[in-house]
Length: 69
Image 1 (cartoon, rainbow, N blue to C red):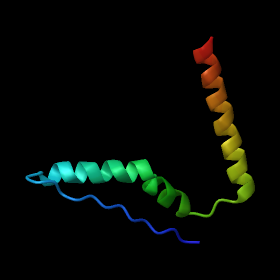
Image 2 (tube, rainbow, N blue to C red; image 1 turned 135 degrees about the horizontal axis):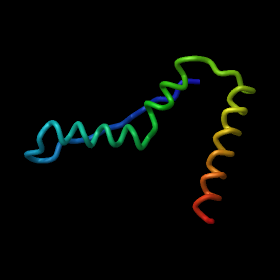
Image 3 (cartoon, rainbow, N blue to C red; image 1 turned 180 degrees about the vertical axis):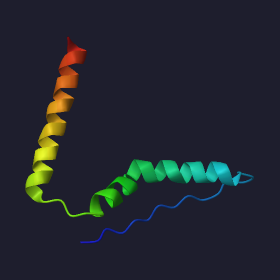
Image 4 (cartoon, rainbow, N blue to C red; image 1 turned 120 degrees about the vertical axis):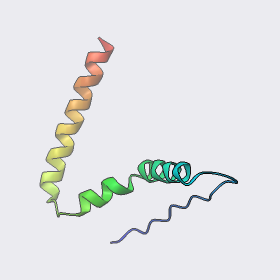
């Protein structure tokens, strides 16, 4: 199932191209488009994906426990 992306940034008056490009890049990062493209490059079995997600959750919980102590 393909997901269409529609990220659009309009140039403001007298805005340099570099600044416009930076705003576009920021928007792409917020939408997590590049992350999804990298994930879709190769097929990951659901069981492997669940295992990775569990490890990631465990790491986040450990980090939160360190901060709260």
